Length: 285
Ligand SMILES: C[S@@+](CC[C@H](N)C(=O)[O-])C[C@H]1O[C@@H](n2cnc3c(N)ncnc32)[C@H](O)[C@@H]1O
Image (tube, rainbow, N blue to C red; front, side, top):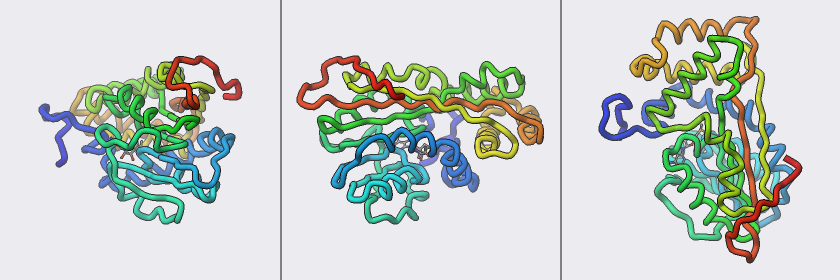
């Protein structure tokens, strides 16, 4: 049942009104984000051997671009792509991909089930992200690897453009107050959450893309602002008239800035050594 993000009572989640998949622009927004985010994500994952029979899990797979790529790149791997809303995954037909409706907050997998677990732009939106991360680590087989990537809006906060600073601040505040998202400090703390889980070969990588009126990052920002506009207006974080003016600013042909950062962390569950703390780092990040 859909919840009113402003009505109090039940607290809304990702996809309840904000970023709801029934909004016509959601597929377009996820595809624009994939254009921006997939190349750096794939560049990191491509370094790892994923042999035939490897059991892979992508949590919150969205439009499924990463799962599809992984299955094509690693023939014989068993890729499970989950989401709470499967409508954009329905068309993901690949013999190596199993699509599963699964809420990572409340539903489990047996411990030691997966050799590779991925989650991009999911944990930042979950209030219980630390507990969820710990459960995800428990689903890793010994020697298995986890990859978590999330946005942090610190580049927008330091922009010389007041409109970008204002938009980044309004998005950050609104997502935090309505959904409990953290698109600021959580990803900026990487890779500490994985070191805290006792993982080894821990690495971190940051990717910032240019934001223009023409590129996919710009399209994703405009679609996000348009999606969040009613809630930002009602919350008082960004009045609608200001959001409309900001959208026009983002469409200017001479507009150029740095978007949010996508920060990835990864690590390996030590084989046969339990989950003791080990701060060995992956120096290639
Ligand atoms: C910003 S999108 C990211 C999609 C994809 N991972 C990507 O990076 O292109 C967040 C995704 O997480 C899913 N999601 C949100 N809450 C979830 C939960 N509790 N369990 C599983 N998936 C969830 C959403 O439905 C959505 O597909």
